[in-house]
Image (cartoon, rainbow, N blue to C red; front, side, top):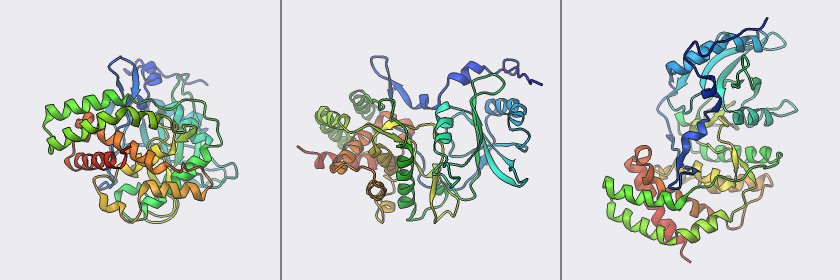
Length: 370
C-alpha cells in the first residue's frame, strides 16, 4: 500500500527542500551579481563537549513527517528515531539516532540524516568498500534519492563511539586526520573529475575586507591596513599563480575536527571523515590549508605536526601526486584566506583568529616576494 505525505499540509514546501543546498550558504554575490564561492567557514578546533541539542522546529517537523515513509523504505529494519542537533552542526539536515536490524538479527547503532543534498548521498555510496572493509567515510546501511515521491535524499550510516576529535585535543589528531584526507583523496580519485573548480572573486573579497577594517576599527588597524595594501598590490600575480594549479582532484571540502570520527578511539586508530556535502573538484592544498586554518589561533597545537606538511607526507606515502612547489601554493592560499577574513568579520571576528590571520598575511607577503 502506498503511503502519501502531504508536506504542504504541514507547512513544508517540498520544492524548497528540493532546491536548497547547504553549500549555498557559503556563497556570496559578487559585485557583478554572479555567484562566487566564499571560502570561509570556521569551526572550533576543540569543542568543550559533544552535546546533543534538540533540532529546530522546522527540521523536526519535516523529519517526523517523513519517518513513517523512511521506515517503510527500510523494510522494517529501522528502529525508533531520536532526532538531535549537535552544538557544532551546520546545515539544514535533520539528524537522528536509531538502530538497524542486520540480516543475522543483530542490532547496529546508526545515524539517520534527511533531507540531504544529493552530493552527500552520491559520495557516501561511491566511497563504500566493495570488499566490506571499513571505508574512510561512514559505513552505509541504506539510502535513497526520494521519499514519498519527493526529491529528498537520505542516508542511514554507522554511529561512531569515538568522536568527533574536536571534543578532546591530542597531538596525534593532526597526522591522523591528514592520513584520512589522503585516503579520501586516493579513494575519490577512482572517479572522473567532471566539473570545474570553485572560483573565488578574490579582488572583490579583498576590497570588501579593506572596507570592513576601516568601518569596524579592529585591533591593529594600522597593521591590517598596511598588510592588506601590500596584498592588494600583489593580488593579480598571486591569483594568477593560484589559478594555474592542478584542479583535477576530488576534495572533501569540509575537513575539520568536528567532521573527524574514529571507530577505534578518540586518541588512536584510523580517522573516518563525515559530512560529504561539500565534496568538489580542486587541488588537495585547499583541503590541507582549510584543515590547518582551524588551528591558526592555536599555533602551539601545530608545533608537533604541521597540517599541510602532514597531508603532503600522507599523500606521498600513498603514491598520490604532490607538487614540488606545494609549499608556495599553500602560502598563497593562506594569504588569500587570511586577507579576506575581515570581509566575514561577523563569523571570523574572534580577536585571536583575526590576529592569527594578520600574522599569516605578513608572513606570506614576506615569503612570496618575487
